[in-house]
Image: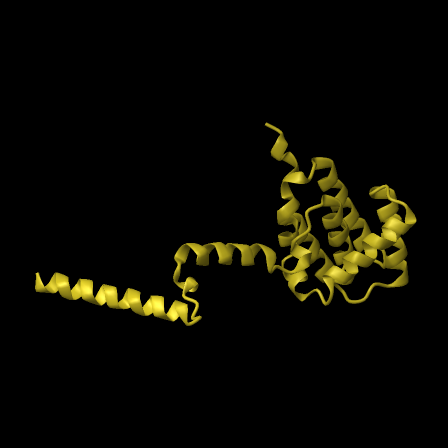
Length: 175
């Protein structure tokens, strides 16, 4: 009995001290494991690099295709004109929208260290929105754009392999 009274007394003392701390402004909400899990999940989804938060397959495709020419360094004038022409023909957008796609893709890639190491991660949010035709178009664009200034370099082929690995499987819809 004396052990139970000691435990209850210690428990009441801790609760009274926590109450006094919260009244003085000390936040003890971080002790709640449920709110900690909710905050961590929110942070994990919303504190990402913007390059990994794209929801549209068109934006992701433009980003991947722009990445294949930017993986070697800066984009040359011939690569830029080939990209704009590819955006206009494949994505069926006008010249202004193609320039906007290119500009936003280059801006999102930035220095590209995080993106080039994990290009497949940028596909995750829009993975289920890709059609097999879009996947085939992206793979063709990646191959075609990588060969604009001559044969594709080893860095470009490695990037293409890692990007294609993240795309939905083309035969996934067939039984």
